[in-house]
Image 1: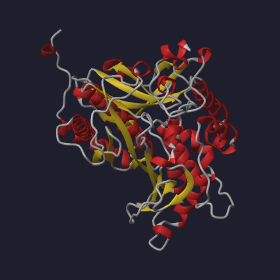
Image 2 (image 1 turned 90 degrees about the vertical axis):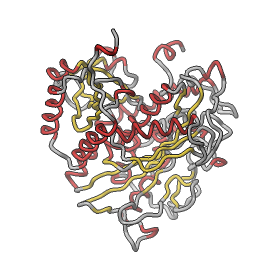
Image 3 (image 1 turned 90 degrees about the horizontal axis):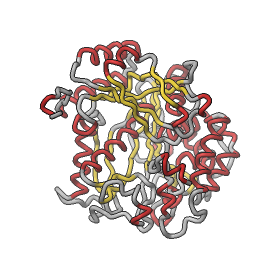
Length: 476
């Protein structure tokens, strides 16, 4: 059937941006969910050119999953959506496979038709058990509960923004073919801030930035990073659940755009050993009554005691949190001090080898930057662990906690051991989810050589949770 016979929705980018910014403002103002639901359902019913609603959720490791529901079916059955949870790694077993999806109408995005397909909109879903209760392995749901609790109990709004680095490599599906090629080919070798107009890396960055604008990201800056073919595209702060959702959409956009350009966007932490790796510096703050309570003009580094206590709690749990921040075998290559790696469990305003940095800020921008996070981590788990630890975790009664000479694990086996024995992680995730996550990470590690060595091994790419497919995994 020719495209000229179809009449699916393809909105101009400017109109998409207006719609997505309006939806973003509703999220920011915490407009009542039932009112948002009514508006969205009316829009779907009235807009005849919408053909499908793409519902997004993430598994325990943070891999994004998507289901397309026919628009007419979804409008009638939005309160009774089910899927097979036993097919999702880390979710339910076969004997209890049915799970439900509740649409989070506040997390609704108007999608560019040229990237996501004409006539589609996106919405995130909450994963529920058969009885309708929040599903324990849906970390997004746990993060949402934490955010709502602190808002309702303390008046806190938890804010975050991430600086997500990635590589663009030549060829489609370069990660999937790494076991054959044993290499990644750069599309640009210009380096930090250097990419000529019209070259492949600049074309990729410009295209991604345009899609992000259309989806309401409110971009700040974009540029090539230190390593060849490396990029970073920064955008504005958001409430913590929306911020984690944005990470998932950001990576999805990058992969879609790269694929259309005949390239691969990779968020492996260290795909090439001889150059800088990819980080996901996680900037966080807490506001109350519209005021940033991390700010104190008279405080050390202009950070309040509340902010320093937040830091001290994360430093106390540094070893315990490492596996959630650095979730793959490959991510431990990045924690190499020769490449500005943030592998020291300390805090500093200037030392970029510190796990936590206190950037220079003002009353509006004062924040804490957790630098030891890799871009392949589950963003909901990262946000949950950072904020729950920073707000509720214990503080070690240790002298010079912020300057102590302690280092994060340099291999995933030590990180798994620290994770398994941590009582604080049990508080964060619960016994069963903690065990499931540790077992998933152990399974990946056991499929790879125990020693990293000086070359990226096929297995650490093949069995990486963002790269593998179920067929490949089951061949082992």
